[in-house]
Length: 244
Image (cartoon, rainbow, N blue to C red; front, side, top):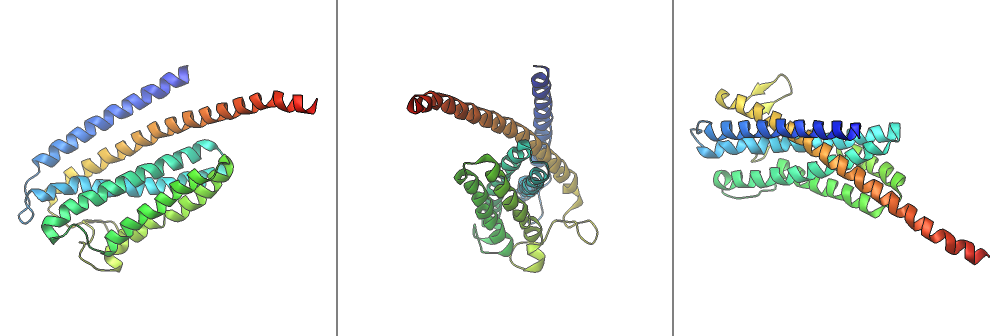
């Protein structure tokens, strides 16, 4: 009981911190000055970039938790890997939708097969396949092992997608926040604090969603095990009668 109360309190506090951070980010984003070229469209940056960051974080988490499962063989790491993949897939879709809304008025089209966009779309195939594989394997331990390998290999998407605009120059702009060869901000400095606050808010959101989904997955797993035990228990008398 005590551990459940502590877990609920932690989730509540994390949820409250996430809500406050998101509200602050929304307020700052809506009050950010208009860009000289893009006008109010620049405010999409405060959703589009953090969504992409969250998808990177989630896919990296899938690989990390999968690796921890292979090392420790503890089911909780497999549950967290699955939860992280679901979150990453969700926010990849959010990233694509936000990018399309930004692309139409600036590029004149919702979609082009640019390297960054193409690799982002491919991540949906990779992690959609990851979740599909999980649904096709009944044995929990084998499912966890196979999923862990797929999740670890899938993390290669993150550096490839991040560097796509450098390796294959296309219509998509290069990184606004460059992390290699020294950190550099290629946009108006006035937007930097708001973007960092948005990134922090989305990071808290990831932690909250991961925690909640992990708890739900643990409960689902416990229910499945109880149902399996009940089925085995119900089948046992029939086996004994048949032997008699």
